[in-house]
Length: 233
Image: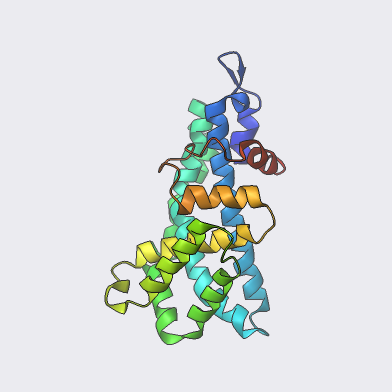
């Protein structure tokens, strides 16, 4: 994200800076939205890990949230880095730039941290052996109920999915994916930044965007997302 922002602030095409081009701004904002959600989830689970020795709820959330977060962030990272490479063009592929190394290393996250299947099975193992983790998970989600229709619909879907053990293992990737996005949405919805939270819910939960980055609704807070991400650059 930092590399993409740095480059697009300096590179001109068609008479103006890349960062001022509407389509590029959509891509950058979408990358920033993904980054905000990933950081929010990572920090929440880190907080739960810190508090787990003295708080059973936090311990239960850390137990299941760690596997959920590892699965989803590891799956999203290669595409995120590749989109950042595209923002740089050819220079984003040559070895003098840091992005080729990051792109090569990105798949290792889901190998060293446990493959996608292992993480999903770890979620199921936690649900089976430690029933309190389900309560901790849905308690976390309940904090954001009523704040966005798409979020409420997703939580209702998850409640039904977790209650059907006959197909839960076969569908566990989908269930864990939607749980991860629900957790991210809940954190954003309760963070106080309604514009960004609503943009995330529309794009990720209501599917009001495409599969590729850069397909946000034009009404999304493009400028705000870029400005917030720029604080890192």
